[in-house]
Amino acid sequence: MGGAAIDLCGDPLPLGTFALCRRADAVLLGAVGGPRWDRPGAVRPEQGLLTLRRRLGVFANLRPIRLHGALVDSSPLRPERIAGVDMVFVRELTGGLYFGRKRRVQRRDGTERASEVCAYTTTEIERVVHVAAALARTRRGRLTSVDKANVLETSRLWREVTTRVVRAEFPDVRLDHRLVDACAMQLITTPADFDVIVTENLFGDILSDEAAVLAGSIGVLPSASLRIVAGAVTTGLYEPIHGAAPDIAGKDAANPVGAILSAALLLHHSLGLADEARAIEDAVTEALDQGLRTADIARPGERVVGTREMGERIVDLVVSRAPSRSRKSA
Image (cartoon, rainbow, N blue to C red; front, top):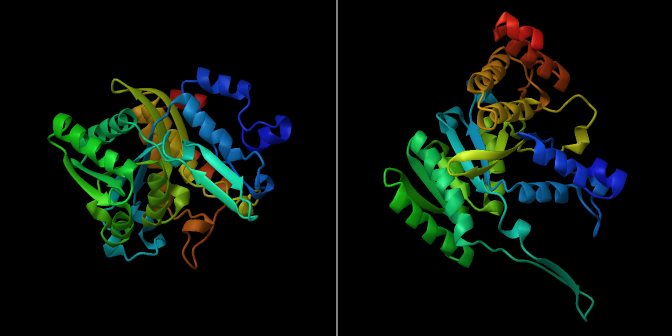
């Protein structure tokens, strides 16, 4: 998939690859993209990711932002500002600008004009709001819906549908609406105020990357993209929220924690293995508590470990917690 598939057969998501994903219980995905395929008009690796999301129907992207206590000093924000940060973004994943009709035309005066269509339906909004409100109900009962309703018609529809769904079906959930620019500011000034944030595709992509600074690094954050029918997960696609970072490829420098925690989300949501998921999460926490730091989360003077050492140490910690019978299979 991605660039390797483009090089091999000209398609970032070959039919055979998609058939494997379709038959699987869940899909764990690495980051895609890179300057090698970044040419005007060329097929890009990201097209394979968007196609996979659409074909699998994974419309709800969960991005938990939680501050590990050991990484308080890794964030550029003051400790008192990020204290208590524990939020989840629920990003609508299969609609909006990313999937709207795209045009680029040459004008008579020699300039170009490009456009994308941003479109949402009532059904697309309802289903992702259901997921977000149900999640808020299991947490602190607070749901923030982010839009740009003072300008965009899609956002006005988003706000109307969200209000109706929450009032009718989740009266115990406290709903508030934020404009996307105000939310971007408040994520830095008062981040602990947020519990569950639901928003459309583009806004969710940008805001959750901004919120990564609260956790110390985008390299430690996982995500789960889910298709949910009648309250049950039917399809899951799991990946760290960071990009491919081609500048450090092959240098044993990338932080593997985001990918590892994505695997924990896979165990929890798609396979129903909550204890195993918790063992991985606890191992990551212990590794960080022991002072293991990749370059992106290391403070001046701290020892830096590579991708391999960090990953192997976390594996060791997971295995050390397993019953003796499970250690052999691990």
